[in-house]
Image (cartoon, rainbow, N blue to C red; front, side, top):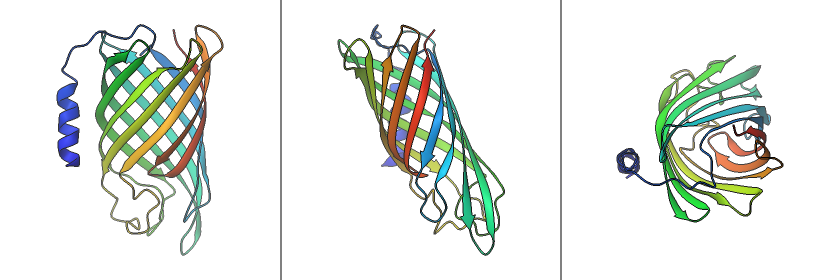
Length: 206
């Protein structure tokens, strides 16, 4: 069923729609992220989110994020987990200030400091699919609700059964306050493969 959802999202990217002029799909965003640890210390790091539109209904989204955590295995170690994703997105208006969106793309994970049997970090790739709603509460407040699926294999040398990133579904909420036409600050809360994750972001919308 998850594979079918992914294929359906890919097919939906080919549809045409008129864009909602109250929402921009051209922005650069940078911020701090924190994830709760279960078999590791809490994970902290950064996330860069770059979005650029092709036309009134499609866009490209590139995300880079990195988090570091202390891992207690047979010996103590510090693992840095990096994740890169590139997704094609499609959106269509649901109302005057609300869009439905769908994204599908490629995902690559890269770990540093991983020891045999570690429960955090990975060195594989796969794909992602997201659907959600994006809209405006008011002229200054924007929100985004997302649900998604990730399909990534585990490296043979990590502990797959007890791994921190064993969940393949994600969902979350993000909101931004625009203090000018170009700049906004935002916060997010999400349940991801890395655990319960929160973020604080600064966005530039050219």
